[in-house]
Amino acid sequence: MSYMPPPPAEPPRISGTAEEASPSVTQRLKALPRPAVVAAAVAVALGGGLLVASLAVDSAVAQGTTVLGVDIGGLGTEEAREKLTAELPELTDDPLQVHVGEIPEDAADPHLIVPSETGLSVDVDATVDRADAPGLFGRLFGGDGGAVQPVTTLDQERGRAAMEELAAATGTEQTEGGISFVDGEVEVTEPGSGASLDVDGALEQLREAYLTAAASAPVSLPVTAAPPRVDEAEVERAVNDFARPAMSGPVRLAVDDRELEITPAMISPYLTMEADDEGTLVPRLDGEGLAADEAVLAAVDEVDRPALNARLAVRDGGVVVTSDARDGVEVETADLGDQIMPLLTNPEGSRSGRATVTTTEPELTRENVNQLGVVEQMSSFTVTFDPAPYRTTNIGRAVELINGSVVAPGERWSFNETVGERTEENGFVEGIIILDDQYQTAQGGGVSAVATTMFNAVFFAGVKPVEYGAHSFYIERYPEGREATVAWGSLDNSFENDSDHSIYISATSDASSVTISFLGTKKYDEVEAVTGDRTNVVEPGTREAVADDCVPQPPLEGFDVVVERVFRNGGDEVGREEFTTRYTPRDEVVCEPEGD
Image: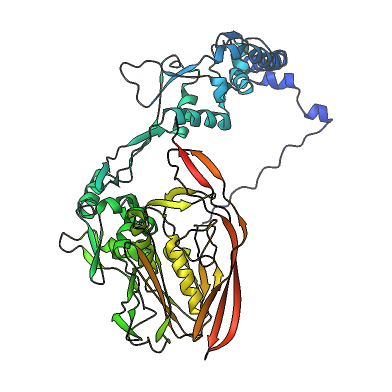
């Protein structure tokens, strides 16, 4: 038998007006138990009171609120900001004492950091907001704001600038380990660590210390260690593996049959050891600087050998070879560094190599004498002079430099270029010269005898003089109108080989004479000199000279003279040219020593 629930009861019907149907508050309270009625009444009264109180105190900081002793209690937030802005700067700018790194036990003379100069300050707005934090209930029910810790701020740009300045003043740089070479010896620089202020860490530390309870105590600012890239182990390795072996002895480079020796003292100014990115000391040799070093160049000069032409002489009317030619050898100094560097770490006995050289061939050899047309004597001239040690030396040195010259067809030969400047370094000594129409002493005195001999060899060979000049006054041992002198930088003695064949110049001298001969192929069968009479004669005067180096001078008249050069072939004259020379009077010079 099934169970059927009874039908639901109909809801009660409500009749009458709405007011009658909705009970009043009073009616509902009456319907509540009595304790609930009391609580509801209290809540209504309190809510109304809070609303009124809130309206009265909403803009005020809690009573008793202070910031670093500045009382802002009971002030509105804007008034509190104004008061703190006016009074806090004097209370917050006392210098902070700081030490870079750990504070030593006997700490003294700390660095002083002025907060305002370092970008440290109080954020007044944020501090007032913090002071207002107790809220309504705290203020209504007697809550005291109390002491409020100010909110600090840091100007990063100013703070970083101040810390970087402090870092520059207090940091210690690390010492990189290094090796240098001085006068052939190894010098070692021991490595050492450095330290510098950690700028970012220091800014954070200062911000934390600012206006805290510990602000009166010194603040330790963090540092960053800076170890050297090149440490002790690397220095020791470089010394043993390279530096000491490099300076252990000379390096020798073979140059033909001779040897070029480069000593540690020569090498050391141009040898370095530099650290790479990994801190490894790597040797480097400045080959260009080494090649330009005076001591190295002097050593190279000793082993360089110029090409030497075959030596010729005239015998039985013909030209013969008296000594063979020789190739020239010149060290390529640009390659010295590359040649030397691999040998520096070799032990004694294995420090030798071969220099890079350039070989030059001589112009005149036994094989090509006839091909060049050097087959006969074109001219020969001798000048004699009174023996004197300075003449023997200077004339002999000039002859040594001239002898064996080969002048190709169309080529210009120069006395000054061939002989060089008459200096002590070039092998010349002091002797008598003519300067300002007067005998004086100077380096190279006497070489005019060689210049005169050369001029006459050119004259009678029939080739073309290019530059020449006679002495200012006539010297009796020379042929008048056919003599020459030279002066470095102002007067040369040169000729052009306008023959069709090469010319070989033979030069010899002894204590009282110098001879120069031209060997080649004659342009003319005969060259004759015709000297005219002296004209425009001027008598000399007398002068006194007061000088310790004065040279007495006998008088001689001045005059003009014309010398003609006559060319003949087959007995017939085929050309003629004039050489005019004007000599000034040679005044008598009487020497009076200084002080007389």
